[in-house]
Amino acid sequence: MRLTENTILVTGGGSGIGQALARQFADRGNIVIVAGRTQESLSQTIAGRSKMHAIMLDVADNGSVEACAAKLSADFPALNMLIHSAGIMLRQELGSGGSIETAERIVNINLLGTMRVVEALIPQLSGQNHAAICTVSSGLAFVPLPGAPAYSASKAGVHSYTTELRHRLQGMIEVIEIAPPAVQTGLTPGQETRAGYLPLDDYIAQTMANFELEPTPEENLVKMVLPLRNAEKDGRVKPMLEMLAQL
Image (cartoon, rainbow, N blue to C red; front, side, top):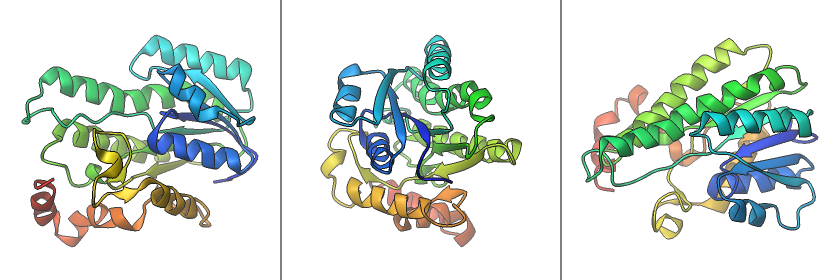
């Protein structure tokens, strides 16, 4: 994957991993468009950065995705890369005080939102040089967090969809899955300072180092997420589940 001279859309670019990756790529000389539902957070992300732009996008809404794709085609015809980082996690869901409506919202944003945005942008990306799509799953795609079954299932779905997408688009668009471990972000209340979670700056540094590898790995995996990614192969799913159940 080329790391410079790209035009990149980063969804979920108003906070957390999406925001940090967007700034990293902008600092490397790329044109970066951050997308999200809150203008204030997007404005804060791009403040003082001439190579960054903002666009409104609700990945849970078909009309919003279609409008965003049309605007990108008109305003940024050189768009050749997507980093789809938009997602939510609610710790009160199935089995822990949540409802099926909560699960529907999580799956709609995390899994169907990924599909909506990717499928809407494939026509534009497929005609570009160095085209790439990066999805964001999670270590919990491989071993679920017992307290967050809908979130874990949605990220397992993102992993499966990304695997299919890579096969479908081979030779046209490079497809990379980013699977973070537990990272100190605002994904859930108090997570920014939660002990045992990987500091965001450390995670981003390791992730960018993985992007610099040649050839670029199909899965961008930092060291901390490997026990989850390899749990099934190593026969450690059950003990990992027991460990996650304590969180």
